[in-house]
Amino acid sequence: AFKSAKSFASLGNKLAEEWYRQGLTWYHCRRGRIVLFDRHYFSDYYAYDVAPTSGPRPLARRIHGYFLDRVYPRPDLVILLDAPAEVLFARKAEGTVELLERRRKDYLQIRDHVPNFAVVDASQPTDNVVRDVRERIIDFHRLQSSPSMTVEMP
Image 1: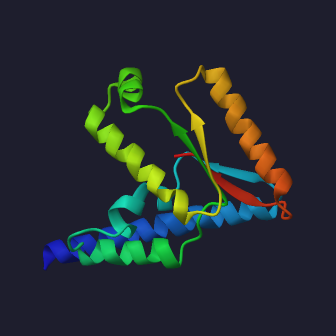
Image 2 (image 1 turned 90 degrees about the vertical axis):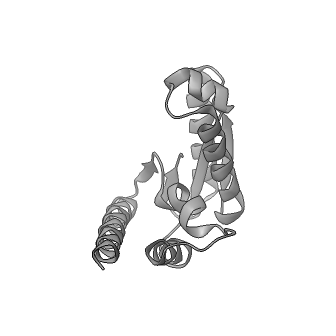
């Protein structure tokens, strides 16, 4: 019972934080600002709480997945800074090459679940990556009829 209560308390905290950040996003968008997320909740939890799996998920994760999939707004534009796992590992040496490759595949899965998905080659020099990301954001913004949007870069 304690484990279940702890799991639901954690879920409540996670949902509250997600909606708080979404509220801030709406606030800034209404003022004509572009909001950038380093990672968006939908992208971070898609593989774990939303995507179909071969086995059952705990109830709290199923509830969280339901909210992310059907209630929580998705970003208007997702820009994936993509590089081979070996390159990412060489840069930061966090996790393992296998873990980084799995997360890369997880992020690529999102392509079919958000309205606009762009991939930028992150193995290029930093100035080129920054230029490519900037161009994708500007091009996307020009195409939008609404002055407000959110952008996420997992």
